[in-house]
Length: 123
Ligand SMILES: [Zn+2]
Image 1 (cartoon, helix red, strand yellow):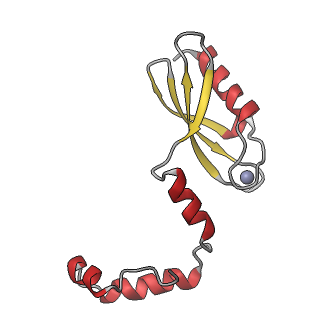
Image 2 (cartoon, helix red, strand yellow):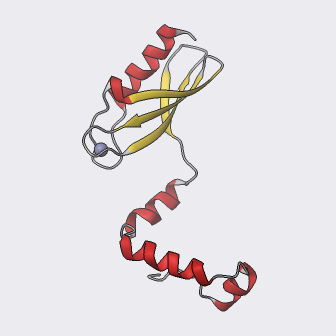
């Protein structure tokens, strides 16, 4: 592993990225390299020291000039992130509701979705 590039990528993230939840800065000791593809793509996990939020961030080192840029990594699109941002957080009652639901659920998703029960409770 190219240690100097690794350090440069982590340093760049610490200098430029901010926590999505609280806008806090990341510290070098809380940024971890998860995966490296070639010498250009780095997948990193950063934990916010203030709110303990976890961010998965991809850093790409441009081959032309060695510049680094970072982007959040996740399965959600920006539109989905905005949508979920507007919802209230999941709480204990939601977990209990889900547990009660699953204990009675027979696994027939087709019937479930046709019945309309699968729609969000608060939608
Ligand atoms: Zn934070």
